[in-house]
Image 1 (cartoon, rainbow, N blue to C red):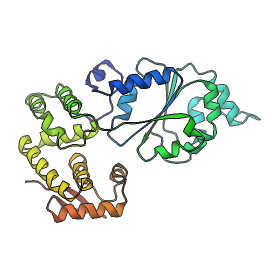
Image 2 (tube, rainbow, N blue to C red):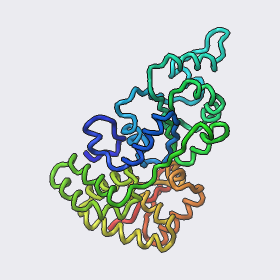
Image 3 (cartoon, rainbow, N blue to C red):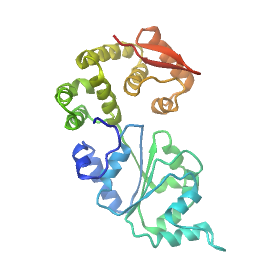
Image 4 (cartoon, one colour):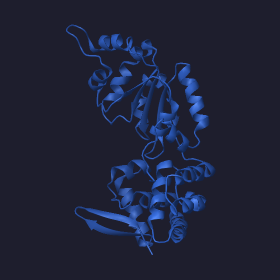
Length: 295
């Protein structure tokens, strides 16, 4: 199965993990020295997979889905006691936790970032390193003073061409013949029509292999990319997003966050691509969905 799920720290998944070795080693040393990491990246950059490899073999408390400081305190096992402020309850509970790192994975936008920053000295006093993973664009909220002095900010970008192709070749081992052979043969060509982020690589490969003729599918994608690039690099990004994620509306929050542009700008970009014949559109309910032109 060609899945874009996050890779765990299990032995089988570690064999599928590609590159980031230099980053993971450096970050592990930083954690050993007591640093706190804020890891940011777009959807599909591999944040969860990378941190799973980073923390493999360590005693981790992974925080569940929490929206504010009260939820975080509850997750950590700290409850306000009669006459005891939440800050004191947290400090006491942290002193009893038998873990080497606390991982807050992809917290939703909301008040937690500023509430967390206000308790910076409590977290420091506990001497337990934190790893917080956030979407690109949300990291600024987590780096507002006084938290800017608390975190080392690291950002996950695209893989190199060679590592991206190696990722696809390793994933080919999960597929039956002839798909495993095809994916190994077409890995480098597929890399050329993606942004080289792990999630995009897997989704694009899946779309190509599901087509009637994967080689023709990739050739058409390459030609479309060249035409879109004549408009702008952002047009090419939009086209790549549609190719990997399927039919998308201009108001989809994920595409807005990934591209870092407004809804109006995405609408214009998609309209430009449609005018060039690179995408088609169809209304479904209240939304107009765009997809790359086929055939």
